[in-house]
Amino acid sequence: MTKIENEEQYNALMQRIESLLPLVNDSTPKTDPNYIEFEMLGNLVADYEDVHYSLGEPSLFDLIKLRMYETGITTEKLASFLGVSPSKTEEYITGKTEPTLAFGKVISQKLDISPEVVLGLG
Image (tube, rainbow, N blue to C red; front, side, top):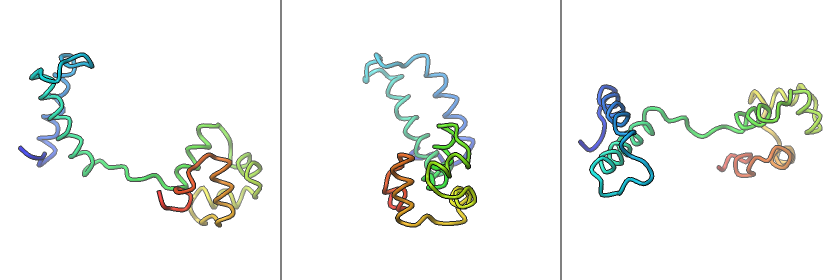
């Protein structure tokens, strides 16, 4: 088998991986048959998940929302922090408005979001 063909195979391999978990740890030799099987199955599963369960790259709006959640700030507090109105901040958060380059710089600096992501390059 070079790749997982369907969900049934995926589920069967996941069950097998679960059964190998107690047998493999960081100190298991790489030559151990259980380790080898665990690694091979893990790679097959990872490849399948990349295709069928990929989350994709987070958008700038997702990252802004995440930063808000992480810091526990509201839209109003974020607006004040960034120096814009709450309604404009809401437009940025929902993706209704793309931030200007100047505002993107502020978002990058104040929310610690990579400039590449703010510019849509990362």
